[in-house]
Amino acid sequence: MEDIFKQLTQLIKNCEKVIFMTHQNMDLDGFASILALSEIVSSFKKDNYILIDSKIKNTGVNKSLKKLEEENLNYNYIYKKDVLKILTDNTLLIILDVHRPSMVEMPTLINKTNNIVIIDHHIKCKQYIQNTILSYLNSNMSSTIEIIVGYLKYLNKKVSPIVATMMLAGMEIDTNSFNVKTTAATYNTAAFLSDIGADNILKQELLKEDKDDYLLRQKYIQNSYMLNENTAICTLDNKIVDNNILAQIAEELLQFDNVEIAYCIGYINKSQVGISARSIGKYNVEPIMKDLGGGGHMTEAATQIKNVNIESALNMLMNELDKDEVN
Ligand SMILES: [Mn+2]
Image (tube, rainbow, N blue to C red; front, side, top):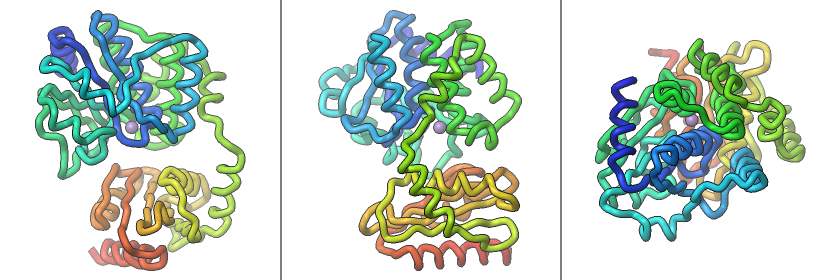
């Protein structure tokens, strides 16, 4: 890892400016990792820009943006429509928390430059961004934040307490409150962030949610059921919901007795059904989602299936589960 950090430092020092990008529907792992790296890049006296969507959906990210504004902490945010205007031959594009080209915030940006660095903690998928000058993928890491904290330690640098707080919140989300993908290194990362001033009260505020969203999930969870001795299923109605809702429901099902694997199925738009899969870490849910056209991690994976209804998506899932049992 030291070698990667050494190369990254050289690339930052040698470039003219940096543009940061994460995946579509930016979350706190991606955003807080970017904020931390932005502080690092600024300390090297390099201009840097954070590519953001004009309509951010993630509540944690929105709350963080508002908090940073209130505290007069100004980062250079840039929208897709303006990013090509600032891109030069010597601009470094650092992509965080994603490595699949179709999933990045602005896929067309990838073909506009070869100065690409990728730092991610997802299991390597078939389609990955190939024209990189540096790529670090480590799926043993709980979060991208854990990698970035490694870089801070390597550089012997800190970030501002407010960014440390956002990083801690991001880790908490990616690990489902330090339950999955959590190792001694994960706790050490949290301890480091706490040491440099992460604020537990602000962290809770960033993670708070809308009561109506909570109640909606509980309504669906009431109708969830056990498929067998360790697998819970929750199917939604015809309402179109955000992908995140499916993920959150599957995650929440894991807290109940006997549930070791959970699936949540629902419409994510008119013609697409999403399946979100979660596991406490005893079983790998990634192969099943992969067989259904998706991907992910051992403990969290998902897929989107076109032109099916919930019932047929459920049938497809059951077939895959049956196959798995036979094997
Ligand atoms: Mn992540």
